[in-house]
Length: 218
Ligand SMILES: [Zn+2]
Image 1: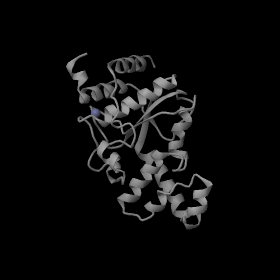
Image 2: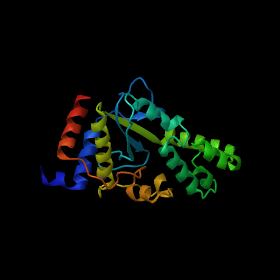
Image 3: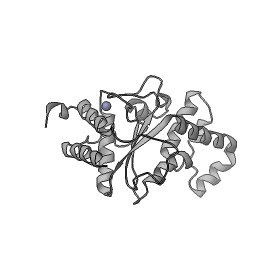
Image 4: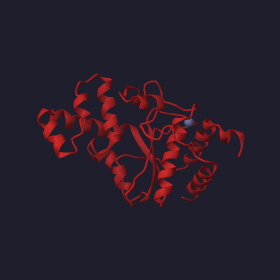
């Protein structure tokens, strides 16, 4: 292991260098061309690092064969089924100090919550915000996919990539990144549309080697 591989900025740099060769695809995600299982990386207009687009989110999926659907949900699901969409909406609303943010935070997934909040919900604002989120994702986000068939390997790679980018001092958000308007502190400080696994274990030398090899073979 070389010295700079031990350093977290060096690790993140190598991750970014490895993923540069992957095709970067626009939203909405098209099912046919995508690997069925894997880890996805999101990039956002105006956000750069390590000689190119910087990773602004890492995600995966649990159900087998579900990656294309997971990516589709970035532009189709409602915010209570996609924490990513919820967070984009929060930042969009917070940026203009829109009081609808309080209602956007309500989780209407369960019947009980719908009964509780439903009558007070401004449904027109809710729909307009969902549409604004979809427009933002289509207009500003793009993605790349690392195919990983094995569920355990996939989830551990996801976690390690999140920690690697989150702990990197060598890349971060631009001053006008939408995430800087997030009411969620960990999004603002990490520069990632994420809350979990930020302080976890970074990629190991063998994970990095596997990543470089499998991307070349992909
Ligand atoms: Zn970095």
